Image (cartoon, rainbow over all chains, first blue to last red; front, side, top):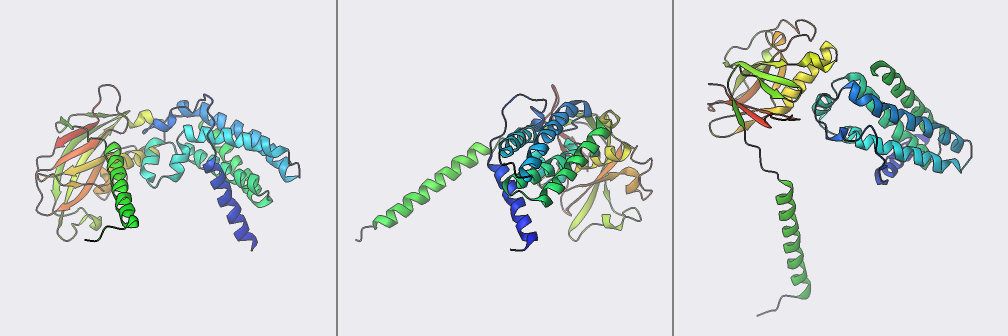
Length: 158
Length: 181
């Protein structure tokens, strides 16, 4: 199989793995945002976004160790991503990513910087998930880039 | 008379079961439509954190230049509904963000109904300045917008329906404004 096809397959497997996992159930600043339909503000979203970034910060070193051959780091990486996915679900960002109605997305998140943040976090989540499934440097590099984009967007709107 | 075979009975029972499950799913998932609260022209309708005021409406006979795309399609006529969206500045986003928000809110949540009860969704919203061919005057600062609908030529007695995406206490879920056209 060509390298490009393999990477695509691992990306899809990562997304499927995430889709089958249960979201984290702990209370968080993201609770209830998925029920909002209009004009989520910076004040409302910043604490939730900070929790998402913290989960990404926990996931990255564990996945980096996994890539370096430390198989025991897989559990820590999976746990951090499970927590992140819970936040992404509670905030409605996962539903937004799957939505085919971009107009509603804009009404929910009028601030474009928050939309960029959400997109970047979701990309990082899926790509790190792909690395957990099939450790590879290409997906990891893209995940790190998406994580950096998320952190950069966060700095502009918090 | 031939007795139905075991597999035939099974197939019929399966079809009945599937139909019943489908019926109950549809019944459970179909929420009754909310009753529309009537509002007058020039009366502010609260929609979550913003408000919507219908200022006027008209049948567009000669579309303003250079927007020839507003010409009526075959068998249709064009209705332009002029509205003001209040409270946009409270969103704490830049001018273009406010414009995009207002356009998507209007396009996604307004519907035109006629005397026969037919509904026309898919309105196209734009700043009033753009409608008149002057561009977006004020870089997205304006609160005045136009929603353009293509409706069947013979339709009449139009009412604008505005759905509230996030009703706050005391706000209508659905508002109706008779346009007098």
